[in-house]
Length: 297
Image (cartoon, rainbow, N blue to C red; front, side, top):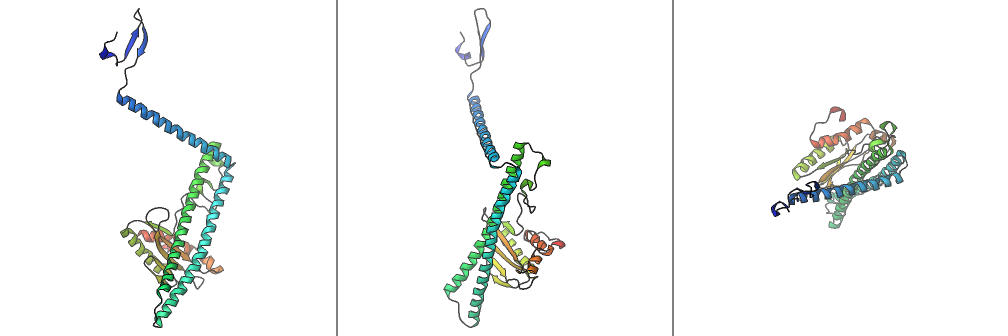
């Protein structure tokens, strides 16, 4: 028999002829047992991920028969969001016109020696808050569009893997681009993100300077968190509104720039010109404190 002090060590069993008939492993230490438990847990978690991916793959192949289906579904969702943005932009124009009229009425009262009633001033403030909320909604919708592009890019890439498609077999609109040439995470050239009072205060000061440099209509509203110039009158007028609002998608603040041209054929053409494109592209650079190249002015 084996002495008690050697029982937990690795040893062999012999028959009466001295031939090894069995080998007994050494008893596992507490650390070894813990490591084995960790290994089993990790293997289970890995298998769960594999099962989840297989289930997602089955759903993907049942939902889409081709890459064209994926692109059509993505573009349909983007169009739906764009329609919501268009409706919000129409509402913004209505709010801005109403707000300008109310402010002009209040100014007229003050010039005549009267004081606008507290209720009327409260209405003006509510209009301002409604305008900020509308801008916040547009920022949120644009962020939604980026999420849609990213999700469909991931689906399209996985679909190719499952169907064993090569890059040469890919369809137009690959990697999350839509028919207008957008990318998975299209940066918003009229939305500047910041965090911390000092950083945001500096960016807000630069935003007001940007407005003064590029807007051609006079300032009609100068409030703590929103500055608005008057509506465009001529075909080459530039009206700009900047607002400092809470980031709807994450913590922090965004400074949103809304640029408008006159609603006329010539005004719409001007808004699609290289000059306006350069102004829009220069917004982020201006607020970042980086110098804007001359061709973007």
